[in-house]
Amino acid sequence: MANYEKSLVVIWSSGDREVALKAAFMYTFNAKKQGWWEDVILIVWGPSAKLLSEDSELQEYVEKMKDIGVVVEACKACSDMYGVSGELVKLGVDVKYMGIPLTSYIKDGGNVISF
Image (tube, rainbow, N blue to C red; front, side):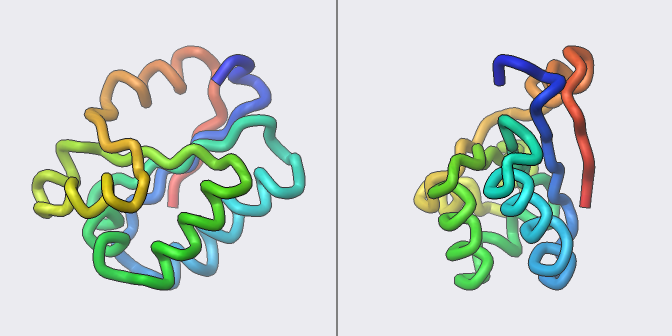
């Protein structure tokens, strides 16, 4: 992410698939597709990691987001707790410890929202 003022970081932490489909994913996808933000990052955090590993519809949606340029990352500590890090990697998610990257996004002026 080069220009933080034109970037959006979406933290998706809910284990509720309706929150994913009807809020987090819908906004994240359109934010990139419609050009509302130059760079869009979706961070899979907490219970959402387990949900994504099990739900094929959500997996397809994430693939659709990646296809248009949304960067998808996941918190390794969280996904390890649920035993799903390997599954997320197979889905093409960048699984890594997110404390420092998220702190950087915030401190460097990134726009962060959460669902």
